Image 1 (cartoon, rainbow, N blue to C red):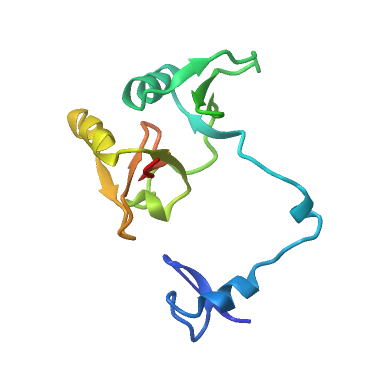
Image 2 (image 1 turned 60 degrees about the horizontal axis):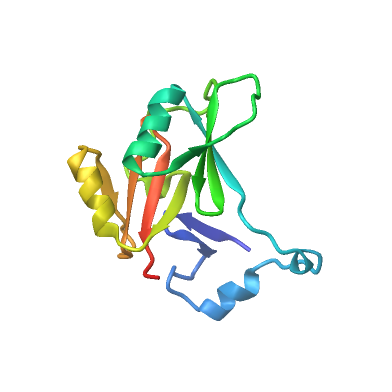
Length: 158
């Protein structure tokens, strides 16, 4: 099957992104093995250039808490985020840090939920951090950390 692959997703040629939802759901690949395993997210790792600068950003700007981390032979930090963590690793970045899409929704990103997006906007505005609102119309925004890693913040009422 030929597919269109644009910024809104992948869908069969001849169908729009707003096409038949049942048809799209029928394309999903399922596995009897996978249905027996229950997964949950443990952590996300991000590469950073300066661990101290990044820890300050994530703790002071986003309010995350640093927790103990074993010595892996390179600088890093673990940050608690509810039951999950963000692991920061000060390593040589194999990815380009320039030329990334302006809108973080069109790049690899980590998405975090908050009960009220207005609080986050206020903090980002006060600190002069540039962000873009979600182009989908959802209550969500995207910004980048000091190393260009894209972060999405989504308002999810509790």
